[in-house]
Amino acid sequence: MILSLPEADIPVTLVRRPRQSIGIRVCQGRVELIAHPAVPMSTLQAVLEKRREWIRQHWLEQQRRSAERAAQPFRLLLAGEPLEIAHVAGNRPAARQAGRTLQVAGVAEHERERLDATVAAWLRREAARRFPARLAELARLCRRQPASLALSSARTRWGSCSASGAIRLNWRLVQAPTDILDYVLAHELAHLVHMNHSAAFWSETERMFPHWRAARQWLKQHGDTLFAFG
Image 1 (cartoon, helix red, strand yellow):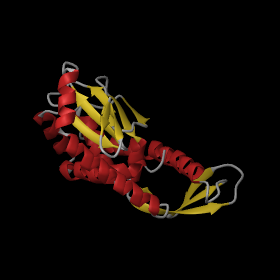
Image 2: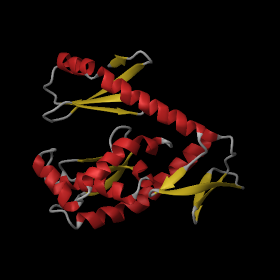
Image 3: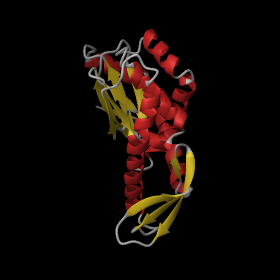
């Protein structure tokens, strides 16, 4: 699906998922439309048309932020804290942390794509190292234990939880403050008890993470900044 705006044609990804309402999300220059499998395409087209100006304003704001980031110096965050990038000698692309500095070898300063890929690989390793401990900590509060944890590279979802108890977390969350990661973890753990977004689900989320509203708002406002790499 394509939504034509005065500025550009925006791709629309349709996600069919059991839910009562129709959801719309604008992320990374794309629109995600979430609806129950029974909702006909004619209804979805009507919703897109009705929300056209809302979508356009959010898309324009994201384009403005992207342009601002492109004009700014290279900036890296780990758990919400900045890291400086230092280029060091080396034959192959590699990265290692030394205090508040990420030392990147085998990549010249002007090779932005290689730098992004090297940093993204390091962030994924950090996510694999850090996420299990945070999950274990929050899972102590959960009424049902997760079956497994895996990393996700999804472009429009921060996490997911299957009926079997398998949890997937977007590795880009390793850049966000720890309480933002904890919110997403609590959200997915709550799905172990309620596979929906009912009032009972949000009550379960709040029991494990009382400040979920503020964290969800942070993701809405700043989540696109976590996609600078990869």
